[in-house]
Length: 212
Ligand code: PRP
Ligand code: MG
Image 1 (cartoon, rainbow, N blue to C red):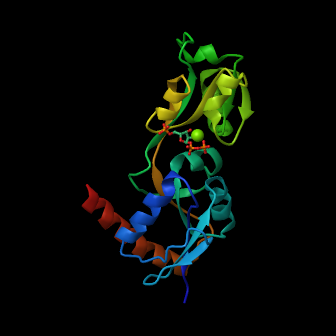
Image 2 (tube, helix red, strand yellow):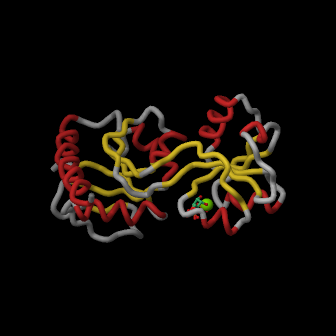
Image 3 (cartoon, helix red, strand yellow):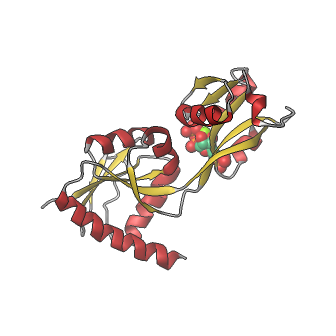
């Protein structure tokens, strides 16, 4: 039997809520976080646990058919990939932050500065639109430490509760974009799997409505 292949974040903040929404859709998945793949017992669906940043490429290649992913990741790495549903969880912002003690007035204050980020494309585009040229340092995690160790003057990263910024003596000064979890679809999805997707989307819509 044909199954639809869905990618969800392997570990991290999206993982729990992604599995929860599938569960609320009445889909029973054997808990297999240590395995990279799990199969639903009562719906034609296979779950692949993948690294967030890899998911856009898997969708593009048609290795998975759909994904639950942060909009921010698609904006950074998958602008070509279609979103069919906003899921109303994992809300966050992608923002620029600077040390608390810095006098910050406008985005022009970033001119010539060193910015540490895991979202280089997003930052580049933002600065370009503002006519600012800055020096980007790409790092993959714990970005907020960069100003404290002298690696950067500011950062661009995800802000959710704001506690990571607070702990690192940083202040959010520009919100580049707002994001939430979305359901994204591979451009390579087959007609047969599209039908399964429609059934899944029907359930997701009901769940989202019930949650309001
Ligand atoms: C994420 C993100 C921010 C933080 C934001 O990091 O990169 O650092 O969460 O959340 P907050 O505003 O609620 O503090 P995560 O802890 O996932 O680790 P990583 O950066 O090392 O991937
Ligand atoms: Mg972080």
